[in-house]
Structure formats: structure tokens, C-alpha cells
Image (cartoon, rainbow, N blue to C red):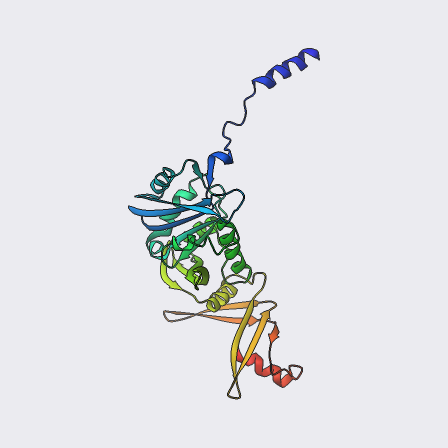
Length: 297
């Protein structure tokens, strides 16, 4: 027993540490990456925190090259630390770049063992650089800000739940095309704003996006209700504008596909119970009044 104990103690001193460990103090931890241009002439933006005490302070490195990997190498020359995207939350892709081949732009991240497959993929109107210039308006770390923003839209049934892995599957799917969050810059402070869902045909962005309301019904019909759905509109009642708001409690549908010559028609039978959250005329305890509101939307 004593010999075994001595042998184990000796071997303990001979054991090495983790050969592939990565220390945070030696890394620039990238949380958001912006992409614009096309393979052959491309530009990337890498955002990472510049202060441990204040997560809202961050640096944006710019890299250029013929490939995505070359842009990373170029940007890495501009920092004293090695860039690491193990905590990447969001990829911002310029809409013009996505119209050619989105998968080609994301391929390097699919092949990297360090890339999180749950990172969000977002289409931006204009350069993604503008979406990384919100240092003075956000109270969160930039990666957390974008992840929470997109997740909030997903919970509200405005964007489909999509990440790097899901996006790749849908780009190669023959039964359903990809839909991604579409953001614009809006307001005096230049804050990102959800503008609807970007529509794809295979690997290419079509250049068309749905409005926020259209996105909701597209997701309800094509996917399912998420955590909640809230809608509001103006109703022309007796030549007056009446505010009406409601939450969708449940959404059940039955689909029937019919062919008429070369045309395909889809008919939906929808059961959508709601809770009215705003209706100034009141009197919804009366059946006749309830019937009127059911016919409007």
C-alpha cells in the first residue's frame, strides 16, 4: 500500500496542466462581429470590452482582406492581445453582402470549434459599423445588448428563433426558407430598431423584408406563437378613430393546400382567442358589440 501511495505522489508531480488553456487576460473576447463586402473584398468589425470595471466601454477593431479569416488576421495585428470569439453573441451582416451568398460569409464561423452555434445572425440596413457606434447610449455590454434585443423580439413572436446552427439548416432546406432579423438605425441617438424579418431564397437575401406586423403573422402561420403576441390598431367606427389593442392567448391553425392549374392556393382555418387590452367604447359585455370587434381585424 505504501509503494502505491509513493508511486501516485510521484506521478502527481509529473502531470502537466491544461495544454490548451486560454487565459482571459491574454485575450480580446469578441462579443459582436460586423461583416460587409463580398468574398474577395471584405471588411469585418470586431467589438470587445476595453474595461473590466465598465462593460459598456468597448473597442471596435476593423480588418480588411479577401476572406473572413484574412480580415480577422488583419484586425488582430491592431491589438496587443489575441482575439477570441468563444463568447460571440451576434453577427451583423450588411444587407447588400447577404444578397450574394450568406453562407459563404458565415462559413469560417461554422468551421471554427470556438464559435458558439447559438450566436444570433442579423441583417442590417447599411454598414454594420453604424450598429457598433452606440457606446454612449447603451447601459449593457454590446454583445449582451444585441442578444437581449433579438431575444426580446423572438419572445414577442416578431422574429423566428434563429441562430448560426438553425440558419445553416434552413439555407440548405428545400421545404422552408430562412428568415432573419432586420435592423435599421433610428432616432436622434442612432439606436438600433427592429424593422421586420428579412426574407431569403436559399443562401441569398432577396432584398425584401416584412414589416413588424407582417412578421408576426408570418411566424404565427409558419412557425408558432412564442411567449406572447401584442397588437394594436385604429378602428374606423362611426366615422371616428377608435384605439383597439389586444393580446393573442393562443393560435391554432389548420392548413389546406389546393392546386388550381399552375397556381397553388393555401387556405387557413384559424382559431385565435384574444384578450382586449384597450377598447375605449367599452360595452364588450354585449354580444352585438363583441361581434363588431371580431369582424374588424
